[in-house]
Image 1 (cartoon, helix red, strand yellow):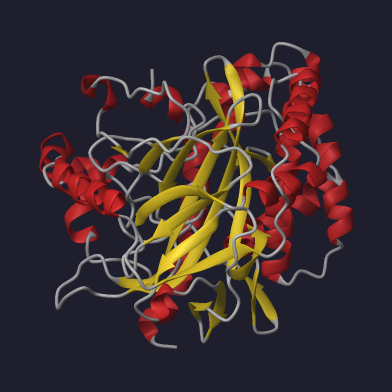
Image 2 (cartoon, rainbow, N blue to C red):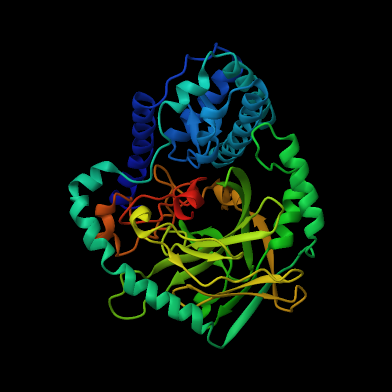
Length: 473
């Protein structure tokens, strides 16, 4: 390892620790929990993960309770915890997020501690926090951390530079809209889910009705089995233009210290989330496909680089019918929207800040599977339609994106993402030279869920549960 790499390896844990300490200094404060074996064991594991530069940072850790975690959705609910059942469900969901982070830190450290015992400590942590007076108010008094760094915006004269950043946006949107209307160009290859469930709208409606009825928070929380069946039912068929090996979807893995893509194992990574819309919480299904690179289109292509991908997210209405598609690349770039039901209207331009790319509506065709078309090379969204669910294609495996937080690296485990900003090493792009005044760390670099800033001339996060309300009226 070079001296530069060694120094960088030592710097990452220092940055992560500095960010964590600064967050604790300026963020919410809670009375420290009572000393216990559980609290000491969990705190020790988190400290070891930070010192090793391997601490998972997908969600925010609650101060003093390292493996109780909150994402933007849970944080947005803190002001609504006005009953014991609501607080209990919130803490239950926080412990579930914490368990995922705990498993990742434990695996990536190669810890010899008893994972089962550590996981068993989380209910005790929840019970301790529940006894703290006004803990939701203490947490809610501070905003969830932003992916936009104020110091970069100050240095980059953001009020001026954001006007310059926005100049190429309209021509880019016109180009992408034209490519979408043209559709994919042959040759293409279809990739279908290997274990797909046939559409069953009535069953999904029943599940959601029951979930709404039993959730104190109003979240349509489903059982693990229901979640997997739903993700299988809506898993898309990918139609991908083929110009080279960089257009074959695959599985991320570590090779010689670098992240690479195994194209012999077509895989799609999935997750569930929530969005608030017209007074109700809606379920969102996300699907992620990876490619080995975005190859250069010419001698100076500031967008080219190692690894590439595409996120597709399907928002279901309260009866389980697809309402909206939105999409980004794993850098947070190229945010696009496709309505699936009539009536969705963007807010006036003066209310939007940076306008998103709104593509033509693709009304749902019941009993059919969604097909998403992806371009060669730059892997843009160039088509969306509905096809026979039994349409043939190369089968792909579907996995939870949680596995990306603890990939095999020889005999050890290692997250695809590194602290403190959740970036994938080696995926920085030349465009960061132009876009850093936006406040985003390494614009163009691929990053972890929860870190996707999706606007450069205003501020917007892909995982913001109020995103639909910000965009549509």
